[in-house]
Image (cartoon, rainbow, N blue to C red; front, side):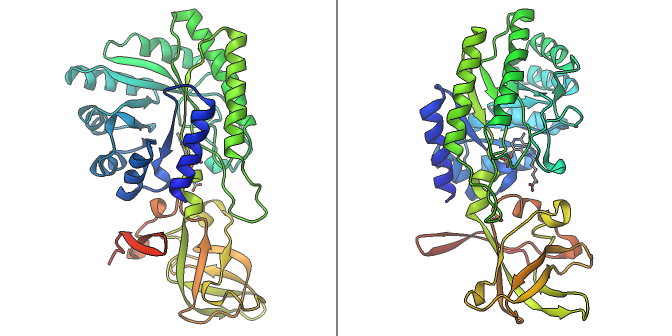
Length: 384
Ligand code: LLP
């Protein structure tokens, strides 16, 4: 499924965008060596957001030149590590980072390619907590206030940095092409203004991540190739109107590469019915492997893996094992009468579960097991 998702993006890119355009896997969605090996084999780029992700990618043999380093507070150590490893691009987030990166690159006697992260000020109507394209946020530099124009002027004046273009990320769980087209309009207007001001032509537009996945059957089906076609048409038309050279396009899908490849299997501890209130089904995991319900009230489909044919007549809440009343996986769902040692499966947990896991209460993280053609293998060992 992971490979099929990559190929869907790669094919749509070949069909609709020009040479040099590339989907970059946003590896915060699921970061361990085997993911980077698959991305390398499939010919994807990757986006990393920390020295830890970069280290994991490089350890897996992922080619440095196809790595893009993100983050709104990269440390000096992050910058030095990325520069020394010869990574393709830093996505510069702010002016202080430009100064620090210029210094690091000068010391290493290299010129470092960068993209400049700007905020187009778009609200794609997604969950507030995972909405990062608004002006009032801690990522990038806003266009509307004039600060992004100064950011560009500053970046262009730095000898050891080569500005290749712009980046924006408008949010996550976006089902349509439209918010991306709105971002393209704003970025092209901005790029045109920068061409007029500095004679600078952006070679690359990185439009960030964000295509959605179906967590529930009632969620819309996303036509990713169709959205990419619409986006490409919109971009070409916008460039033609402005007589602007059509840039290379990068996207950074995370969730839509890996979410629907994954599910979490829990062992049931028991059922606790609080008479007159509700029933809890407890499981041997919870917010430590999937904090998304606690954080965002994220919806999931939960199925009784070891009792798929039983009547689901128990309305219940699935609770984890932390000493924390908010440690819930889902509330008010329908399951059969579960018993200790039954298996419960939570679907579509391939993205932002393993990577957001913690050791709260000193609970070990679960194993990650890859399955293909009826064969299973452990790609991350269970913590003991
Ligand atoms: N690029 C940038 C700069 C991002 O900030 C993100 C996600 C992506 C790409 C990938 O977006 P995706 O295609 O996966 O939607 N932990 C949250 C999501 C926060 C994601 C923030 N950035 C969750 O569990 O839903």
